[in-house]
Image (cartoon, rainbow, N blue to C red; front, top):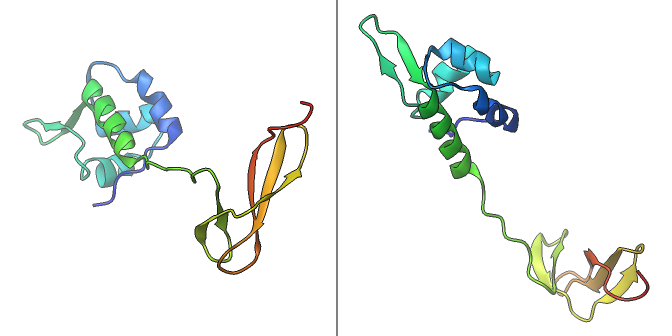
Length: 135
């Protein structure tokens, strides 16, 4: 099953949730989502809840906050940047080694490393903070 979408604005509003039992419509109002989102997305994804004798759904506030934070932390990707001396070739769609790069100054703070791609020959660029000269 697909992970539910919890936007940053919803996560920020988790601080409003109190230590009490909420109906799904009340939770939806508190964090600013549609009531259907709670029923169709959050509950099937494992949102902790209880049902009473009349089959009403109740959601404990702190349990919802904890579940939402765990859901967001699972969703974050572990992106790793390119290593030093590598750049991304847009034509080959690969990370390639910069061989004998030329330094082109953009402004006081930024410079480009430019070198031909070893695979296709196109010029590839890697921006970095300016290292030399008067800053």
